Length: 111
Image (cartoon, rainbow, N blue to C red; front, side):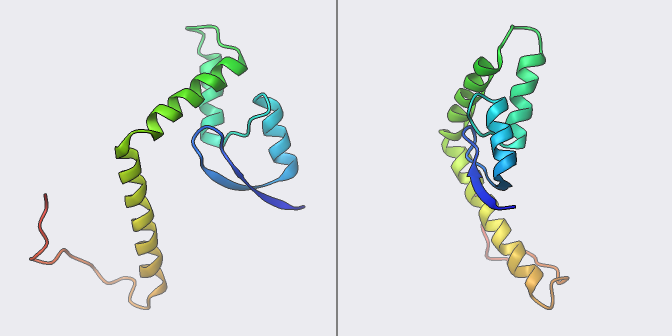
């Protein structure tokens, strides 16, 4: 089985999947590959019943929603913080004293 990196067409999340799985997901969502979270949101939209959405309409609505959310500058800041914390936690877990408690220095100011 060959693994391929694929990017969600809604939120941009990248996942490593088999070509068979990628094809199955694209078949369900009108040729678009959606990550697990976005595909659940689209399925939920289709089954909600308030407004009769077909699968294609639900995919377009969710893509529009993700586009609006991702264009918000706060999302970029949050993503940067997430990446920084991931790097830091990776650095801490690889050090021999990973159980050491870290505290803020007295000179750190909060704004």
